[in-house]
Length: 115
Image 1 (cartoon, rainbow, N blue to C red):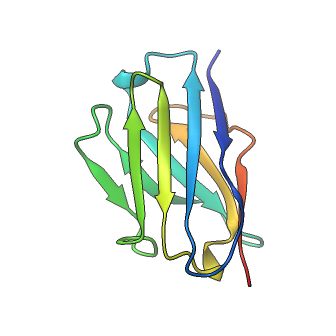
Image 2: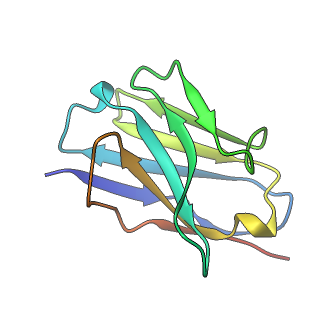
């Protein structure tokens, strides 16, 4: 029973910061790469960030590179997305996911960047 529970979203002004969390359960957390995705209104879900199982490899979409940072705490079975210098175009529902997990998404967490 895989579970992914995102949290930490909210309303923030442009230039502000948020830290998202994703609590995972139902699998051996450290064995899997994890990802963050987002879906903005009227757009398809897109990959935002990737992190390998041990945290040694990270990758980011060009649109967030230099502003967002993905991390993980394997003891807590949790991944994070630190989002800085937020822009209105970052407004979306943010989801986490697991490598090789198909057909399952958590509830997501809403991030709204607006003045």
